[in-house]
Image (cartoon, rainbow, N blue to C red; front, side, top):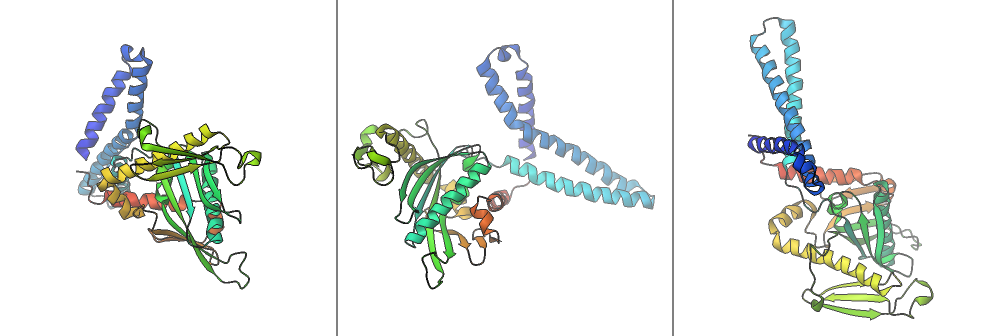
Length: 357
């Protein structure tokens, strides 16, 4: 890995020289590409240079330990050496993390799909609560949330809701949320105070565009129908709702939130592209998929990843064994403690076996 770091430093230095080249500076497009590459390497190169300076300090202090005879100075050198060694280990781990392969999808926006599972009306209300939780989390990070499609239940919850979350590193932060989320609580309609268990499935997909996934219009069946549910006077009077079926895979996406047929079709295609992209990744990148499954489950939306226990004010993520007695705050969007723990665990697994040599 040290050889890799040396190569990155040499590339960084070359890019620094290129930025000063008049020919590059006179071309906005060339300058932008070089500046972007330079910026992407800056963090790891700066950390590497700090690490090299630290190694020099460690070597010098170790030399003092071997040569110094004064006991007071020797003790000071021992303490300094111990502190430097701790910093060296920390710096080494930081470099390992920076050199880990990056998920190219991390910077993408997110297609969020939430569906009520077992539990009837109570599950639809929990689906509503989970969507609100992610919306509040997005709000705290200055991300934008847009509802693409929603199917409400008779009690005001969601049988299904699909949304678009737009923001910096949205997929990188939320990709661990796919799976089954279980809730244990006493429903408001429960007269005898009995505890019920319900569940919803959450799917986190990276938003993709036409460049990432090309869809042949001949492979689509588009059905138009009247909207149902909230929507004003046009409900059940105009054929604005859209259902798109991708014939080769059988994927079906419906959208009826907009009064415009064109807008509904555009939203439905956005969801379809993301689903097909995820499907292609699972099929073509089995090794990556296995690594992710080991961390966050199979992603087949049938695995329990987290339990929200209301009587105990507790949220437990079963993948990392983390329990927090802060259910109210978490349902209001305070998810960073859980997400950070998942990211840390993922990195630790990826770092196993890596050595700076």
